[in-house]
Figure 1: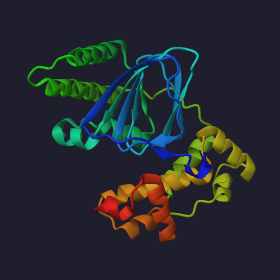
Figure 2: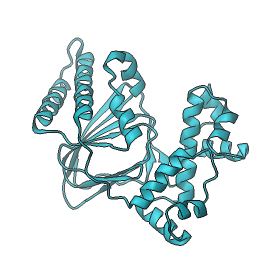
Figure 3: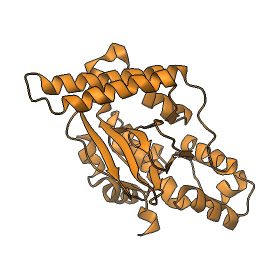
Amino acid sequence: MNEERSISRAGYLRESYHYFHLRDTAGQERDFHFHEFDKVVLLLAGRVDYIVEGHSYALKPWDVLLVKHHTIHKAEIDQSVPYERIIIYLDGKYFGRSMPEARLMDSFDQADRTGEHLLTPSVSQRQEIQRVLSAYEDSARDEGIGAPALRETFIIQLLIHISRMTASAAPSRESQYDPKIQQVLSYINEHLHEELTVDQLAERAYLSKYHFMRLFKAQTGSTVHAYVRQKRLLHAARLIREGVSVGKAAADSGFGDYSAFHRAFRESFGISPGSLKK
């Protein structure tokens, strides 16, 4: 795979949510990617490390991982043991509109803002989650009146439990990332509109250019250029959705050449910036 396109968009969601309960012996290993929807990952059995925006998490059974839309992530799966998990794709805008006073998606915003994507439930919290998920899976066989609406109430209950977990959570287990790379990733996210060269970033990490490039690739799975470009594209897409003109979104995201921005945007998202604005 071309390193400059090693981070890709994966999948669409055409409903308010999609629920998967998966069991296999291998799982599916992916390159770094992002989604247009929010995602909950709940490990039931197996060994998997999730790398999410500069943090690496070794999940344990019943850990809950929150991945906000446009967040770059990757699962590294130990294929020597059975792997069982529940994954839920969520249309965050839908749930935000359906019950605005409940602030159901605030946990994802907080994970994105703080970099704390992992929640480890207490015994009582785990029991509540198990109860809700069991009720949902039991209801999956119900074809009676209002069955889809009933199932959605269980998803809402789960989101409420996650919000309560987030409010009471202690900091998650320590990231496995090198502190110097974490510092650089934070700097990149905060200075996307500025020039970001490998030399500048290596100097901020107090590393030689070539040592920094090797360490960055080993830690994130991506080249510095590919990572910066994808973060800029995601930032530009967010600005366009918020009503900013395409030209200003490109400039504010660090693209000096509009034609290069337009080409990279279409390659990454499959549509033109103007189509996204419409």
